[in-house]
Image (cartoon, rainbow, N blue to C red; front, side, top):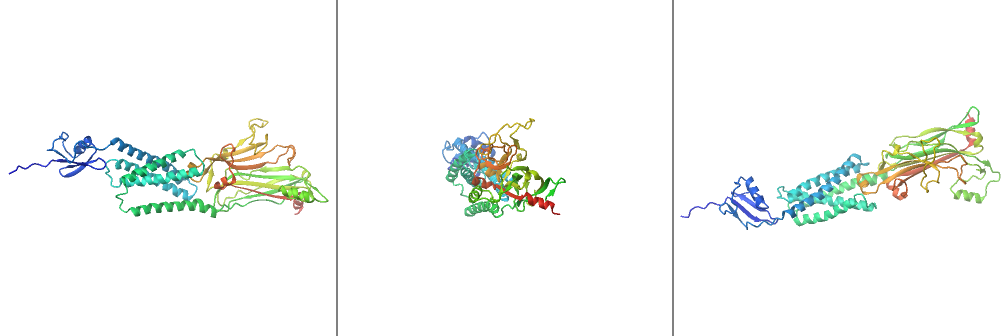
Length: 500
């Protein structure tokens, strides 16, 4: 009778395609090993004595050459680290963008996308942890599918950021990071395709359809809030100037003329005020008995002026009053009213038979497309030395804006777009409002010692307004500048004052 021969306690199977060798103890799989050292670690956790002789066929049975350990740990770990690095870098970017937009985007769609970006950052973080397991012993069932989803998110978002920044012509900032992430995405997609990580997804078609549907819904929400709504709901900002009933002073030498400045928001869109200005001027004139001919009409109309045949404006205009309707940087929400009334004194001796003109200008940007920095209302700068008694002129405005020696004050700040994505992928721009107080030069409409202030508002690529954006380039900010005016002959104003 042949004596009974005990079965080996430990069986080490042949390496799989990745170089892992399955280990069984007593007929039960206890783990997988990359190397002899890893094998002893697996056996120790399974309760096998640490001093087991791996070369003893009575204790260990090898289903393949005991020296066959095809794993290349440095190569496998480097792939895992590179995969994790790309996922974590993208997750950090999405987390920053998502948190900023969730808390501060100017539109509902922007805040929805902020939540989507935060979810994407969470998925990429989970995918980074799954990559460590997937290029390890794959203890988690869906580690590969998690990595695949994370790689797809990185690919889509990095391509989106790259296209946005390229289209905006901004090749600084994070531009090269997007290029690196796109290159990383190409490698990562090749790597996960080579590993065929989609195997094991229970319902691959349903999974792909769900991802595509979610992306479509998110895109539609952003398009509705960022594109459709702003154009079907334009701002409604009534703006006008008008005269009130004037009053003669006790000496009957001056008129007190009320000026009504109407500026309110009756729409559904909030606005930020970039700058405002109003002026009251006197235009002295005399009666022209014969009237003007065709040549004079043509010149005046061609220069954009109104023409009056029997009125000759033969004296310099005089500034009666000027000011701002509201503070620069103010926010005008729906229902807010910044209208005001001022009273202008008109000396009858100087006004003669002329006219009194009220002119006003406002400039604003849509609060659903951009916003001014909080520092804008306090950013005022003067062209003169405010600490000197003489108020000495110390610097000039750009030559395209004013003549050398003209005084001015300026507000400026960076202008921020509606979402962190747009701020990150586009070059920074600055909004500026200049109030110019020109000095008299030969040929000016006003006389020596007088002035006729004007306001200039624009958006520029630089803080010093050297490169001003065109109207088309300013359109995405929703900037609008409106002007209005009204005038009345002094005779009519005086008659109204004398009428009970």
